[in-house]
Image (cartoon, rainbow, N blue to C red; front, side, top):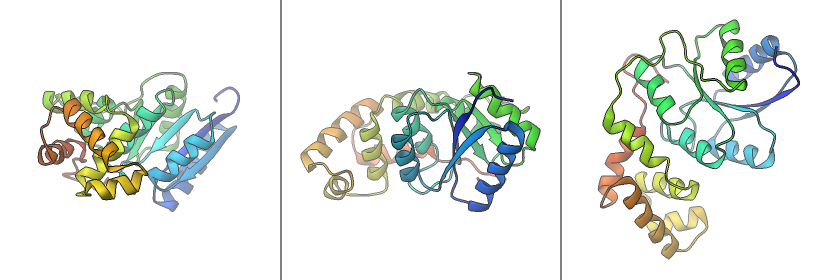
Length: 219
């Protein structure tokens, strides 16, 4: 059992899974406060409203995110809060990528109650937790380099980058993030420089690194 009371956010857009995970956490860990959300925007709102969050359990497929972008955004905005990916994917490559992008653990959605409890306790104690398969896939050096570069973007730059990759124009991005078009252009310049790309097309291609590999299952 975890001493004292921990506050955990479950971020998943499937209500039935959130409910099941809530039940599993309370049964396994006891005195735990749980908050729930179903989109990256709502997750950001919860993190802004609560300054005592101990852990985020994050699904990889969430409205407002493209693959690992939600993980990267949370880690940039709240580097002090550990994030554990909870995913239907058990691909070793995705597990390795989650750690490269800043996750403190990876729990398969097929995990049983004792495993979930063990994983959460380990991360709350400051450790990295991985399933038995671990992250044994060989590293992709290009992607690892991209992971390091994208983590240098500020949260606002990351938001602009993700809107850019969805095909939004500068005017649309400015409206979404409530800044001037000149500020968006300034962000674009910084984004291109930090990611080592020259234009929007190269930026969109680079964003493919954030996609989830799902050759055998849905994530």
